[in-house]
Image (tube, rainbow, N blue to C red; front, top):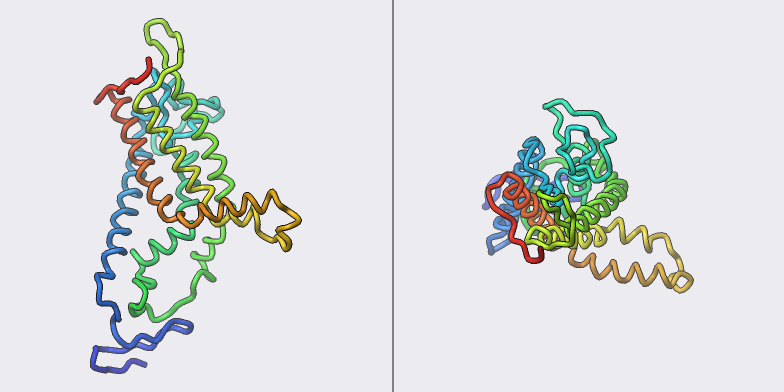
Length: 278
């Protein structure tokens, strides 16, 4: 039943939701945070989608720069040198992006992330739009029904994301080498791209290890921390990282885009890599 009062049409809240008669009790610009989140998340999704279907300018053979969007590159369609773990898959048809191997799991880990759920629930579904703001939906089922019940897969996506972080770390280590195109000799080298890849990997590890699932794996289900001092120490450290999980989530969105964009510019010949050593 709906009733009318001095602030407009009133719709009873869904079971378990707060009964807020006013449209909002907030006096500040509460809509600004959801708007910024929506723009930031949409930018990442659009950019990642475009680049995953781009199919080129993702590897710099001279400096071993591989875009994190295309890692690991396991298809025979990959450009020479980009397959750091071999080409164990056949050539992909043009309609299948090379980034399909790792990027879907990377996105799956982030989509089901506890912080990102809060962010896009508020930004796109307005559920709820903000604290002390009336819920616009007449029903609420939470994450107990399809498709949102699939959010429980986050703990499984973590294992894949952990593996991908290891792969990205290996890619970064290879970026400390440079190959002379004339002689084919490989030697130690550092460029601006190397540092960007390093910053990206550090950010990825901070985001991955600060995940709630990682924290639960190390210290969850323990009844007596005193009997597991090593796990308790690890859990304590990860708990400190967990307090900044939101910041790491946004940091890695920025570093992923920056890393891929820089690799694309160098690989396409638009710019030259700024070399620091060799």
